[in-house]
Image 1 (cartoon, rainbow, N blue to C red):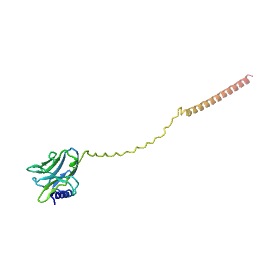
Image 2 (image 1 turned 90 degrees about the horizontal axis):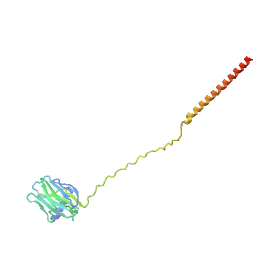
Image 3 (image 1 turned 45 degrees about the vertical axis):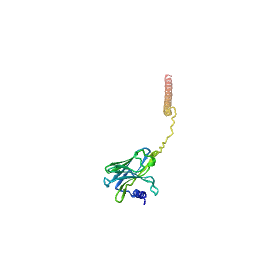
Image 4 (image 1 turned 180 degrees about the horizontal axis):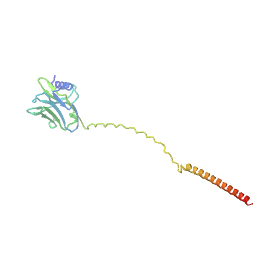
Length: 210
C-alpha cells in the first residue's frame, strides 16, 4: 500500500473514532476570508519530546481525497514545514503539552479537516480533527420571530344622548299648580261664605229695625 494512501486510511479511521490522547479544539469552526484561525491540539499522555504533526484533508474522506502534510513541531528544530506550504501564513506554536496551528489570512481554499498526529512504534495516533470552513461572508444568525399578541377587543357602549331642557320641570311645576288651584278654591269658598254671612247679618238687621 502506498504511504499516502495508508496515511489517508489511518486519518479516516481517526475521524471516525478519534483518540483521547490528542485532544483537538474546536471540533469545527467557520472563519471569514483574511482572518486568523487558531487550531489547538493538546497531548494528554504523549511524551513532551514527541513530534506533533499537522495534516489537512481538503475534501470529505474518500479514496480520492487530497491529503497533505503541513508541518510538525520538533523539540530541537522547532517548526518543520512540508513541501509547498506557505510558511508566511502558517505557524506551529508550543506551550507545554499544547500545540497550536496558526493560520493567517485564510482563504476558501484552506477549508478542510485538520488533524494533529503523533508517530508511535508502530502505531499512529490521531486527534479527532477540526473542520474548518472559510467563507467570504459569515452567515448571520436569524433573529427570533416575535409572537404577535392579539389585540383585546374593547366593548364600546353607545353614547347616551342627553336631551336639552329642564328634565325635572314637569315634576316640580305640576304639584305647584295643583297647590295654587287648591288655594284658589279655598279662597273662593271663603269669600263666598263671607258674602253669605254678611248678607245674613244685613237681613237680620233689617228685620230688627222694622
